[in-house]
Length: 288
Length: 117
Image (cartoon, rainbow over all chains, first blue to last red; front, top):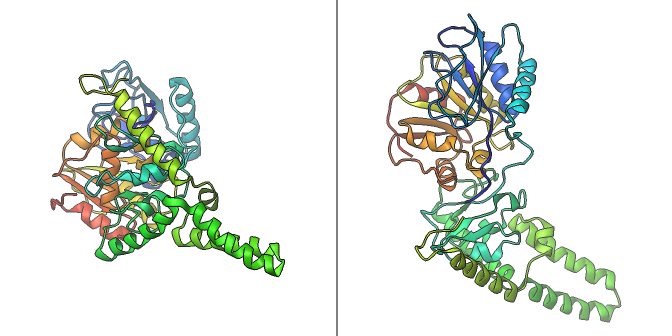
């Protein structure tokens, strides 16, 4: 999976050497506020290390310091400046404001703003069949230089759409925030595999040519309804057909409505593989 | 809460951007952690960190025994992998707040039992 690297601000709630402890209830409230705000927080209760080991991003250390906070922390990387803020007498809501101000000063990535919904491939099960790539309408998937399927554009994924996991014959695509197993990462059971195989039959319809199927069904309906001279009923029949598929697969209707033709998805796969090969350098490494 | 097993680093995921982890479980686990006297790392959302390949995940993957309190082990394992920070085969224990009660998770955190992902 590739996505732009971004520096985020890490928060350290420091109660080690040189900082007074925080009341349990206040600590819990502060942690909850910061986590809900999208920040990662390290709670340090012992020792004297204020910056997490191997820190590579800016850090703000919050504490009830007994003396003036140290000028330097353990971080030895210029890319990871360490800010200190005294929180004596500060409550949880005010903590958020303090961290926000440091965030602005450090120029770090603003947390949140996107529900992290994207597929995660279980390579213990994936057979690299590329059905997900051909099926996905949003170019979430790509192919690595060694022709391995990968999640290339996770932020392109349609929130709450698990469609690609439905077409995976090996139950190898997870959406950790999905409501049910095995798509949510729960163990794959024998009955899941059989159920998924049944879904593949449906996916053959979807991935193959849903338009043809719908056209056929619609045509039949139209002929019948034409005889009855009732276009409204024909439209209603088409709507029912789409709704049924949507309910069976838990796929957003707009995704179903935008499914490509068989020729289009074949061409898409060929383009992805060709692009992956083109990216490959003579030494077999990916160009940046 | 009794002292937790400090031989392992503890990483807690708040799953802040979805409602799939029962709110009472994650709040109770977080409360127990904050009252335990143990140092720990808490992240807003492991999925979000994995999507942007946060380099901090590499540190979790390579800095020794770790207990990750999040969701399904299969999901956590492949999330780390997708971020270019595959978890080692040994020394990682993943506790699932989607299926376990807070008491059970707290009890597991207190033990030194070695359960690999």
